[in-house]
Image (cartoon, rainbow, N blue to C red; front, side):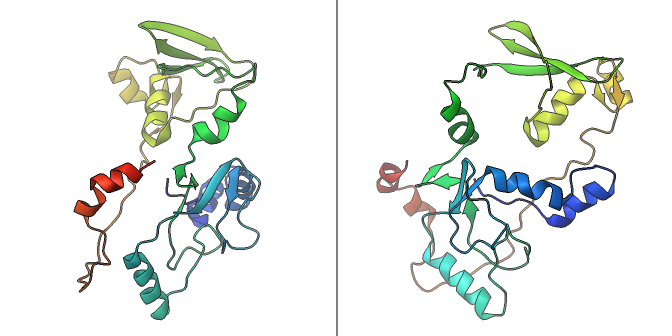
Length: 234
């Protein structure tokens, strides 16, 4: 739910490597198109206002979080909109939430369009491979597993693969796109020899700061797991 676009230099480095259309300047309009930002101090001209996905500060800010931001800004660290042009600084978390609820892909994109005749959502189904034409190297359909049977869906225009940082490389390799030697070891006929998945970078976080406080401003796990808080959860 934490919403962070990513660093500008990462996108620009992908474009510099020959991936046309992936510079930050190129992708920024698409970020703005999906966003419905209600962040009051968002950097002017960077946040989208009319998109389907709600982006906001989390409704609850603990006292310890407020004190942390206050201490950082008091030490000369700037308060920034980290989805703006500068990411070095301090900020409260922006998240894809609306009125305290998670604004998921389903809620923002699928649910409002359930009456469309050209939209079909297949539940309890798992994509097993993208069907690729060996001559043209073009995706022409998808194979999926449902109720102990395999099915094939053909595509007229395009196939969009969006299965996450682990799922997407997995499906590509099952489809014959990946390191040739590795695919052959697994009994998969290679179609395109590419180092799929080899540039995977884990999303790391470091809890490097420890604070001792002399009051009850901190968030304690025991209090968060109380029956009262469970009843308030939505």
